[in-house]
Image 1 (cartoon, helix red, strand yellow):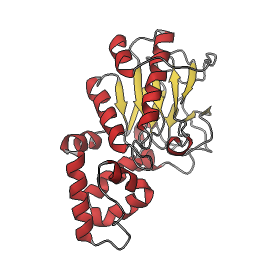
Image 2 (cartoon, helix red, strand yellow):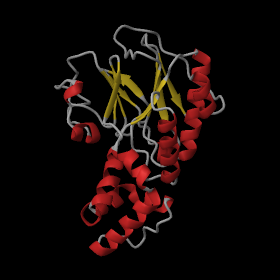
Image 3 (tube, helix red, strand yellow):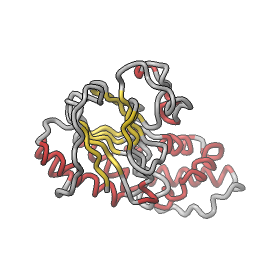
Image 4 (tube, helix red, strand yellow):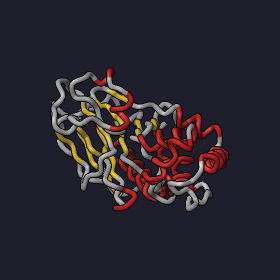
Length: 265
């Protein structure tokens, strides 16, 4: 399995030094790689896959898991390419690759189901770049666009995306966990167990996520909120470093014993 994964992930790249093992760190059951928000940067996705490939080769990890935290689309120029690549990986390696849903995927699906009502918000949040990546001109979709025009555009986008990709996106889970490591898109309610979180919180975050410590040993890896650098602190692993504007896509590699390393393009 490792050989097959490394063949798909590509050539070797550089990696960072690893942090020491400690008892209060995330401890997944198998080597785990969690990747932050991609936002239409297919070039950075390929670079990250190379870095992950190199790390797998350098550590000799067995049965690695690769988890993407959502927000694959919008803002950046290559949303269509990113979706195709991630769908390929997750379907070729369903036991090892997990693609979570982000709030931008949710907004896209909502816009397809109710374009006149939900489309304008998605457009304001970067959806124009996704439309363009699928060959649809977004310039006519102003705030005053008619419901009929929105419906026409949604139909064209649905055809461009295709039913299989829509089904795949709709089936993306909201969370994943192994050991005490959880991966979600936006965050979690620190006062509730991880298995009892609402979908809205997992997709859009919680006001106390960054300030209130958890009462269990769960570590929550997430994206959604852009930071200058990835961070591991107080049960939170922040991985969104604004890839679509900064050119810096970030991920964390976590070993079962708690040893971890950041990987960055």
